[in-house]
Length: 223
Image (cartoon, rainbow, N blue to C red; front, top):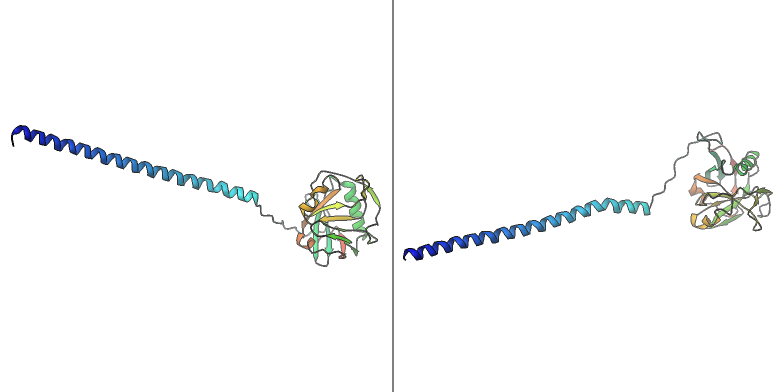
C-alpha cells in the first residue's frame, strides 16, 4: 500500500471515530431530558396533594360538640345564658341569645325558674323537622302572646324557636317553643320565626325525643 492510500485510510478512521462520538452524546442528552420531565411531573403531583386534601376537608367537615362544664348559674363566664332541659333520656343544654332576643329570653327564664315547664310535654314531634313543647294544655292551643323579636340568625340543627299562629309573624306564643332536628328541615324559618337559642350539648338526646315525651324540667342550672 503506497503512502497516499495509507493517508486516506487514516483519515477515514479518524472521521468515523468523530461521527460515532457525536451520535453517542446525542442519545445521552435525550435520555436526560426525559428523566427531568418525569421528575418535574412527580413533584407537581406531590405539591397538589395537600390542596386536594384541604378541599376535601372543607367539603366534608367533621363536626364535634365542645364539652360543656357544669355550672350552677344561668350565666357563664362569657355572659351567655344557659338552660337545661331534662328528659327521660338525659339532659339538653342550650345557650339563649340574651343580646338578640332579650325579652324572649327573660320571659323564658322567668317561666323556667317558676317551674312552669315542669312535666309539660313535647306535644308535637315531626321527624326531620322539630320537637315542639311548652303548651300548658298539651293541645297546641295554649299559652299567651308576646311581641316577636325577629332576627336573621339562621335556623340550624339544634336551634330554639318560638311557636306562633299563621296570622302574623309579629306576635309569638309566650310559652310554646320548638327545637330543630335538622338544618334542612328548619332553615326556611329564618327571619320569619323568633330564633332565641341553640343546643350546645345533648344533640343525641334531642334526637331521641318522641311525641308525648315529658319535659321533666327546664332549669337555669345544669348538672
